[in-house]
Amino acid sequence: MEAAAAAAPTSRPRQPCTKSQQAWASASSSSPSQPSDALRATHSKIGIAPPKSNLRDQFSAQHREPPAGGAVARLQALCVYPIKSCRGIEMAKSKLLPTGLEFDRLYTFAQLKSAFPVAVDDSEESKDRHSWEFVTQRQFPLLATVKVDVFVPDPTKRTVFMESTSDAWIVFRFPWQDRGFAGFVQWVSAKIRDGWRAVPEREVLLPVEFPTEKEIQERGYTYEDVRVWKEMVPALNMEKEIPKELSQYLGVSNKLAIFRVDPSKLREVYRCAPTKEEAGFQTIVGFQDAYPIHLMNLSSLQEFDSEVPKDEELTQLDVRRFRSNIIVAGAPAYDEESWKHITFTQGTSKITAPAKFQVSCRTVRCKLPNVDPATGVRHKVEPDRSLRRLREVDEGAPKMGCLGMQLCPLFDGTTDRVEFMQAWLEVGMDVSVEQRGEHVYIKQ
Image (cartoon, rainbow, N blue to C red; front, side, top):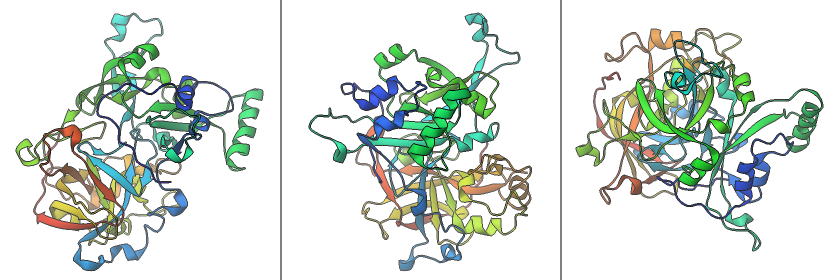
């Protein structure tokens, strides 16, 4: 099922306690039942099931063929990543907000770091000298195997006996089996619930909306800064929701926490982003690396993939390695690197209103694409080595490889309030290029 629900820009009073909130209250239980079991009674998962993925034929030569009607490219796939560096969700349709696609990068994991280790009985003053730093697959590749689902209320599942709810929930899960009899029960339960190939998993339930002040106090959350690259970002530390088993699974030796982006303290983006005068607002992001939207062109990836050395561990470069939000097809290889302003129009979709973007800069690649998104196994050298060898194409990023483009959404001037700005994107939309030009990356 494909469903969508807007995430409110600020916290708001919640509905009376529902099954989903009861699931949140008991999310840390070691019972064979999972938090998502309760959610399924009132909610449905968003996204496209893997067998129907619009990327299942991503290596086909047909994606190099231009779309009919004179468009430069077509929108092939949409992806969101509710928890930074964890597995994404492919969408057929998505709401576009000033911060990017709805549900994208709302949370990030972080570890407590310092020049010296943290003792359990350290004083608060000593702990204050440590700082939280975001973590990604660059350090902990098994994050790629942490699965994420978003559940939104499903009106078709409501009965006269159920209280209404507008709350959406994120469920993330990772492989875990306890020792002894408890582990055996988990193993059997997984097979019964999800089929004979299933493995036991630990689930954690998180709210999509920013918690209310009452919830923050009741659950012991704290406001703290977390470092994202060179920036210190004020956010909500919800480490109490993280089971200790997650650190063991990922191989994190430092203290691990999960942070929710504070919608009232979003990061402003400058560098290559449009000015406030051009966009009508200063570009903002949550836990994205730098810009609201990342775009990849399948033709470019196929061209690059054809030149990357292969071995038993790397047979093809799946576009999911590059964690883009918008994936287009039909444009010539690397044509997107000359785009400055683009518009998505109806095409074969049902969306009639256009969605406009400023194309800010190239995406300068790190070693994260070396991680196989299906297994969490990191290749020793590729595609990083080939990116640096073949894709050193931006004078602003010497000795670095580039692949993909960073985008900032633009909205019609019907409102000057960021919280009311929105548009829609849907697979099948056409891409038209309004302006072309050169790009020079500006470092952070």
